[in-house]
Image (cartoon, rainbow, N blue to C red; front, side):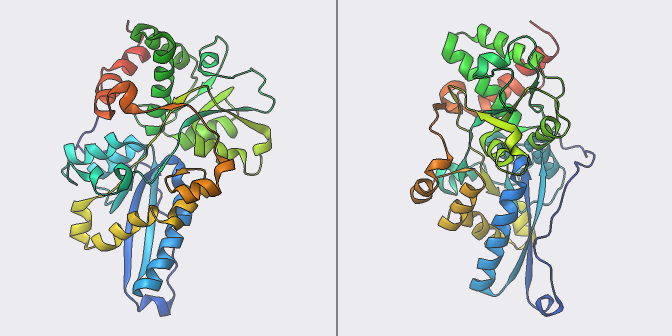
Length: 339
C-alpha cells in the first residue's frame, strides 16, 4: 500500500495561523507542519492558535503551525514521499507505523513516547441521516438492506473508512460469531455505497452538499460537528447498538524535526494536546478527551456507547491491515466480487 516512488500531489492544504507584522518579524519564528487526517481542520485551527499564544508567553518565540489534511493513508504516503511533516496526527496507528516501516522516519517505539499510546483523544463511529430518518435507520443491519444508499470513504485511502469497515465487521462478529457471515454482511453494506470518496470530509460533502445517500457513516466528532452547525437541523445523529473505539494517534517525525531543529517545539506542541487546555479544545470539537475533569465538564455531549477495540476483535492494526486492507485483502476481494 505504501510505496516510496514519487506520487502526484495530494491536494495538500497549508493554513498559516499567525500573520507576521514587521515588529514580530524581528523576533525568532519557528514553523511546524502538522500533517493530519480529514476531519481535524477545525480542531487544529483552535489548537494551533492556543499553543502559539502559550509558547509565545513562555519563550518569546513566535510559532506558526501549518496544517495539511486528507485521507489518513494518503497523508502517510505523502510524508513517505517527502512532505516535510514535523508532526503527524493521523487516523490510526498503522499509518504512523508505516513511517517507520517504509521510511525509518521515526522509531518503532513511537507510540510509547506520549500518554495513552500517543492518543490524546478518542472517537467512535456513528450514523448521520436526514431529518425524520425517513429510511428508519437504527443499527448496522439497516445499512445492509436493499435500497439503502450508504456514504463512506474508501478504506484504501481513508483511515476513517477503515474504522467504519471494522466497526461493521466487529458488529457482525458479535452478532453471528462467524467470519463468513461477517464478510457477507460487510459486502452487502459496501454494495450499497454509490461513491467512495478519498477521505472522511469528502464523504461528508457528498452527503450534505451533493445530497447523495440515505446515511453517512462518520466519525462521532464529524457527525456532531455537522449536526450542531448551521443547517444541521436538517440532520439527525443515530447511535448504533455497538461501535468501535477509534483511537487516532500523534507522533513527532524525528528525521524532519532533527533536520529542521524543531524537536523542542514539536514535542511541546504534542504535549499540549494532553494538557487540560488541549483536552478542553478537543472536547469542544466533539472528540472524547482522556482528562477526567474535562470529561465531566462535557458529559452531556457524549452519549454512553458500547464499544469494542481493534485489539479485541482484530488482534491490532497490523493484523487488521494485512487481512482486510492490503492489496488483495478482503476489502479488495469484496470490491471485485471474489468469493
